[in-house]
Image 1 (cartoon, rainbow, N blue to C red):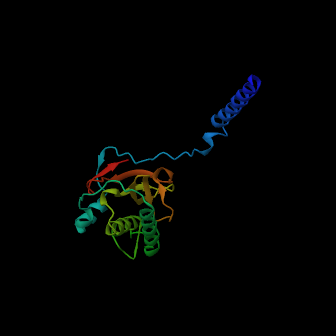
Image 2: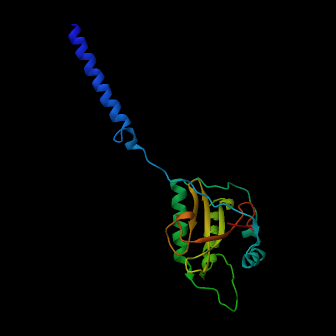
Length: 197
């Protein structure tokens, strides 16, 4: 009986040792863990002058530049994600890309049939606000492309980070994953106030 109890104890001990080794080893519990990318937000620096064309846009469209309440961050549910992708794609396809004429200077417009980058960004912002999105989470940013051209995009602050809606692509990316050089962005509290990035 003693021998049988000893064999049983040794067998159980060896099974426990094997299970412990499997659980703690590389093939054990760590196998199922997934790493999530770090959430990244644009960091505002000091206040700067708003682009002149944006000041003119606000003078002509005061409702588009009104400070409103609401959440400064969107919870990106599957429904919200679908809305965001839908607006980005539909606006990218509905506006014919045309640069401003040099003799007219830079003109910012919303809901146009043809226009340049800031017109795309303003229209996307307007469409999302019309769908009930908080204007505080929708900011225009001024950037530079790799070719050194001035470029404007819509930045949406979400619980997954700052996402960029760019008229050059239907793919929505985290701001750090774009090829843009970031220059300035609107304040979430007041669209007329801008900050360096």
